[in-house]
Image (tube, rainbow over all chains, first blue to last red; front, side, top):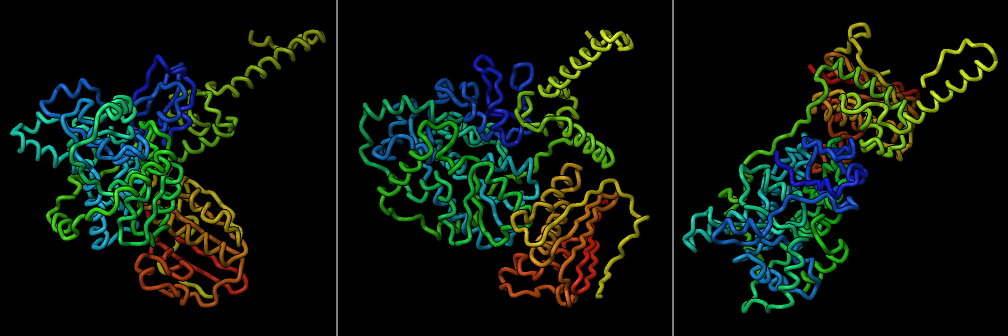
Length: 440
Length: 155
């Protein structure tokens, strides 16, 4: 599996900020270097946000990648429009993409509205298990794959608006311009590492319809300049206000006819809710929209604008769009029946290999772990390089660390050795001479 | 005393215990409601128990724990792991259940049909515990307390 998270060894000072921020405890700092346990990483980008030294980034596309194609098109995320202030209209921002290296852009908001309608149609015919969970945030799907395999059956098996848009535009451009599909480069402007990862290693899809994704933060400078220097398009295309609402947690749920929906965001809150769904709670909820980032995509780790400013901008932009004709429900229903929206593949669990599959051994390891935990200080300082004492105990059992990695354990050993030395000296002075010589 | 024996509960000698831990639950302690069920769930995850078994036992444990918090004074939940099953014995001191048969009836509750379709409205949660376990036994003495025993086969 290819991950989108990249560590810059030059910039990294081997502090433990990323390790402590990681919701799946996938990061260790050993011998002054960061190690990623790739089987645990869900590419949520918490480490990117946490790093004070700018040493964690995402593997995103560069202008060089555009040269591989005869025709390139950018699909801006709905969040993209929240980055340039409330006065920059979506039509202007999208048009400016054609002045920073792309031949064209393709709108995503109407597809969001269509997918929202499709999910609503799905919910009305669906037999459970409840609640159904949105597949919009790739970090959440990956979290479910590694930690909540029971919840896989709760996922709504409907493809994301971004992949459906990429599939459509490639087909459309290929026909219109008479180009082979592989000569058309389709790129996303991503707010996060998780979507980049969903392009590199898709789930529920054999291969992504995207050729790559640009970090919104990296496009920001050139786009700002393009907005300042150039005018907008001659005819402004329309955007779906409901679709743009997907940038903020709750936007997707707002499209459901069911009033029993829940939007949850931020990994802590998501795990809180998922733990309870696993215990059979939240059964009366129809639909859960869950995001790894607080408030949804508007706080993605690859954005420039702060979360509150971005949210406010988005709400103001949606307010100014008026009420264009909504997507025709009958059309979505017939596309739904023709399986246009279906996820191509089943989402499967990603099993983390346990230390043992033998129950007796597992019980013994659990006891050993409890004994280790009793000897560790429980301060969760992470100075050892594991994110907390419990993880250090697990790493010791896995043979990846030793008890002496803990500074408190080492201090105690030093004090213990010192104490013995002093004790021996006293014994010699007293003429006892019985004390065995302490270690030098 | 009323009792109900559906499937046999093996004697102490018949089941080999690999792991056992007992948890205290206090009546009316809504603040910590569900914590024992959550701790047992994480123990089962740590021991690599089958996810389906974990899910079923966690649902049963949560219902049982909340029953204690809502209706009893205090209780001890004993969780044990055997080679072929996970077991729970929950003995509470409290008001007891006057009519166990009635409390065990599916839908003995005031919940709506829709809630029931979604697994809610199981009254005191007893039918939900029974539905999710392979072995289920209840004994109750009004004025003294209730003892629940339930298990799920793992092999």
